[in-house]
Image (cartoon, rainbow, N blue to C red; front, side, top):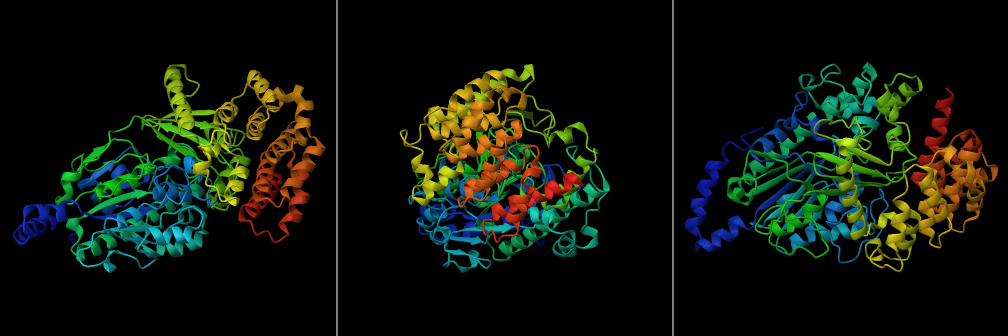
Length: 639
C-alpha cells in the first residue's frame, strides 16, 4: 500500500496554514475544517474479532485493518445488534433495534413508520453527499424507495468522486469476501476460483497453519474448511488496502474519519445466526486524521473496552455531522460535543434466519454474556438450509452421527437450556455455561432482571409470532407503532407466558397448562411453545388437555400442540394436523409446522407427504429449504 498514512501529518499542517491564511476569519476555517469531516465506512461480513490480526490472530494477514487499529481506536467490546445480516443492517440504517421495529426475522421486509428514515437522509439534510457501494439488504418494506431516499447514489460504482467540489461525503464500501458463502457454503472449487486464485501462493494460509477452535473437532476435513476463513480475510484486507490507496490518491485521507467493522459474528457453525457472543461480537475500529483527532474522546493509537452496539451508529453520525438526532433513536452518541455517557449493558437479539425460526435475547456487559433461549427445544446447531449446504456443517453432522465428537461438541446438537451465561474473558469460545454455577447466581439474577426490564420497557414486539407480524404488515401497520398499544398488545401477560418458555420443571408445566386456556391467542401460543420445550415424561399426565389444544382456533397454538402430541404420544391426529398446516397457503404457518417436524421423534411419518411437496413448484424459499433440510436429514439418519 502506498504511503497511506505516512505523509498526511505534514500535508495536513501545510493545508492548515494555507487555509488559515485564505479564510476571512478563524471562525470560517473552524467550521469548514472541524465540523464537516468526511466519513468513510468500511464494512466486511461474517467476521469475529479473534480471526483478525489486530485482535491477536497471528496467522491471518490483515495489515491494512491492523494499521487503522494501531493508529486509531480499537474497540474490544463492540457488538452487532443481531446475528444475521439483514436484521443487523436494519438496526444500522434505522438506528432502531429490530426487537422494537419488528424486523428481527431475516429478510421479512415488514414496514417501518414513514418517519423512520434511513439515517443517511439526515446527513443529506446538512449537506453531505451520501453513497453506498453497494450492499443494502435492509429488511424493510418498499426497500427500493427506502434506498433512494437515503442515498445520493447506491450502486457498484458509487463513491465520493461524484460529489460537488468541496462537499463533505459519507461513503460506505462493503466487502463481501469474508462472507459465509466464501468461508462455508460455496462448493470448494468455487472458493478456489473466487478466493484462492486472487491471492499469491505466498499469501495462502495452509490447512496446518492454525489452531482449530476447541468447539470443532480437529481433523483434516475441518482444517480444510477453516482455512477458508483465513484466506477470505486475507483477500478482504487486500481490497481494503486498494480503497485506502484511492482515498490517499484523491488527497482525502487527511480530512476523512474512517470506520471499520463487520456486520455480525463469524459465519461458521455456532457463530452467525446463534445468539451467543460468537454471533454478536465484531471487530470495530475508528481512525481519526490529525485534522479531527480532537473529536476522539479516546485519543489515538489506543484500545478501549467501552461498550458499543450498532444502535449507536446512526445517532453518532447524525450528531457528529451537525444534524439533529430523531427522538425515536435511543442509541448513544459516541463522538463529538453531544457524546453520551458509556453504558453498563447492551441488549442484543437473534430471531429467525431463513427457514430456521428462533428467539434469543441477550444482555452483555462486554465480558459476561447472558442469553435467554425462548425456543429451547432446538439446539444451537439448528437446521438452516444455508448452513446445511456448507461442507463444514455436513462434516460436523457426519462426525456427530459417527460418534467422533467430544461431549461438548455433541451438546451443540441437543436442546438448549433456557439460559446461557458465559465469561468471554476466561472462556472466549463459550464452552462452559455458568448459568447453573452457584458462584455466578447473583450475576445471573442481575442480568436476567436487566433483560426483563428492557424487554418490557422497550415493548419487544418480536414476542408476537411471525404469523401476527405478517398480518400487521398486510394491513399496512408497522410493528414499531403497534407495540405501543397496550390494548392490542398486552405485553405484561404475553411476557409472563414467554418468560416460562425453556424453563423445565413440573411446576412450570402446571403454569403453562393453565395458560393454554387463556383468552389471549399469543399467551396460549407461548404456553404451547413452552410445553414443546418440556420433557416427554413431564407431559405424560396431560395428554387429554394437549389433545384438546389441537382444536385451538388460533393456528400457531394448534400447530405447536400437534408437534407435542406427535413427539410425546405418537398421536396420529397430531401428525395429520402438522401435515395439513405444512400445506397451508400461509407461509408463516407452513414454516412453523415444517420446522417442528425437524425436531420431533419418528419423523418417518412425514416423509411421504414432504416428498410429494418437494416435487411441487414451491415459490417460498423458506418452505422449500425446510422441506429439503427435512428430507436430507432423514436420509442421512438412515445412512
